[in-house]
Image (cartoon, rainbow, N blue to C red; front, top):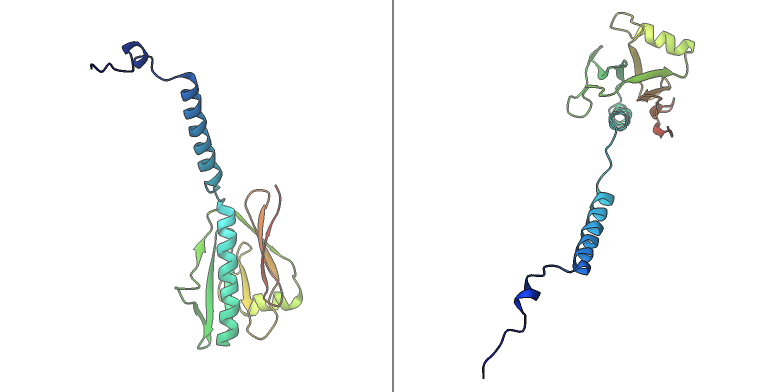
Length: 175
């Protein structure tokens, strides 16, 4: 008994059927859509700057409260730096947790209260020359703080605020 192949040469050379091609394209499209939906969205530099500043401000408030020593944050539209009041003078704060940083995006500083207390605090505690683009925020462990907000990005889509009792908040605005 002689066995013959069940597939003829013509059927073997025919290739893929239309249904097989459409099914493989549908599987590829489904896989690509799952990958693109699960891919992380690109974060803006403004949001990164705002979250980093809020975390450092919160840490500074907690550090001042726990240690009992005042902290100062010098901030302008380009960068910020923390200082601790020790031995009768301002010294750079712990570089591990309260290191200064340059902003990757543009920042706009807005002081919500410019009362006499804030102005006196600024003049009396100023160890640097008076500059209109540099602001100093004193973080007092037992007293009120200077309320302020910092807006990041074009059109200010993200802002960080510090109120007079030391609460730090991030606000995202719709564009």
